[in-house]
Amino acid sequence: MNKKNKLYGKKFSSLKKLEESFVEQQLSLSPEEKLSVVQYLREQYYKIKGIKPQRIDKTITFKGTMKRLKK
Image (cartoon, rainbow, N blue to C red):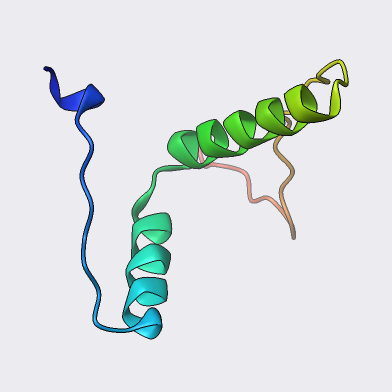
């Protein structure tokens, strides 16, 4: 059995420690991994509701002013 198909779990002594671990895991994800998680959850939601999936808008917006690079 390869690593992707292996099930694993952790035992926590309290709900607070479980929540802290979950937050740490989420914060450690790259932007691409976070987007992948969101896309998966959207697909599951649409599947359950029987709705045709819509695209995620992947545009980037910048806040504030952008400085020009010196040549």
